[in-house]
Image (cartoon, rainbow, N blue to C red):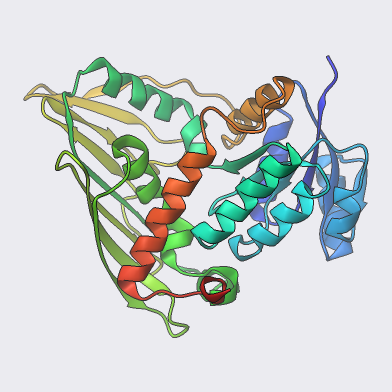
Length: 330
């Protein structure tokens, strides 16, 4: 079987993890990487054994030996970089947040469809074994009808503070960086919210350092969500039904999370989840391989509609809090 040939655009921390996990994907090969810092690309390429190390993104998207590109730059650049790839007919797996707002996401989706090229948001959580197990429990009816979701994500930002966390031009703020995970969980399990309320504590740059959100859904279900760069939080999620609940332990969005099922007044029951080596990015990479081999331009799991619902909800939350980016007026 010929391997799916990958390129990586952006050589930062998350790109390192993704590249490391590609070795766990039998039909994948890392062929090329690109950074505007050529030395960084060279070092990244040496570490992960890619054939090419480019000093420009344009060189990567014009490389004939690349089938699909993983975009790992800050989300303030995702729209620009996705369009660059798509317009050169390269399939795209783009990190979350997919873009800064719904307008940009729609533009990305339209461009992918126009060029008949695969595009997917790299929301790795949706492909992790514990998330699949959570869905199985919910579908089985074991915890009854869903009524409430509680989820948090917070960490104390290191000093000196990384620029990307608070820079509005990079899409900074707790919501788009880590609050996206609790929001993703809520809209994935409960659908489109009918009501959104949110408050935030701003940083000096006017993006959110802390944010708390409540979402109400069509059958009265509620989601109580929060994110912060100002403190370490449990990073747990509780999915509550009429018969019981599932607790996703620290860190609920991550491959390391464990599940616990509580039905009625019975003692907590640990739910076994498939574990394998790696950070967990191999699961979404395997899915991309399946999609490309089936000549899909959209994932049946992380659909364009799913990404649109998520970013529209994030836009709504930002509107409630007065969080604005330059891209919103473009």
